[in-house]
Length: 91
Image (cartoon, rainbow, N blue to C red; front, side, top):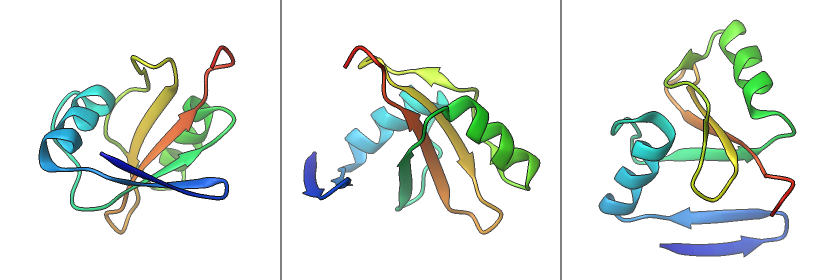
C-alpha cells in the first residue's frame, strides 16, 4: 500500500490483495472496480442514507473498521464506488 498525502487528501494505491481486503472489511465481498473514491464525512451512516435516497446503490451496511472508523460503501448511478468514512473520535 502506498499513501500519498496531498494536503487534506490522500491517494491510496492498492494492489489486488490489499483492495480485496478493503472490500471484505467494508462490503463483505469483492465489489470494487479499478477506482474507488473515499471521502471523510461527519456521519457516514447518515450520508450513505442520503445518497441512497438520491439514487445511489447501497453495497453493504455501514461497518466499524478494525482501526475504529465508521465506513459505508455505496455506488453512484454512474458506477463510481464511494467509501464514506467517519474518523473515530478516539484516533
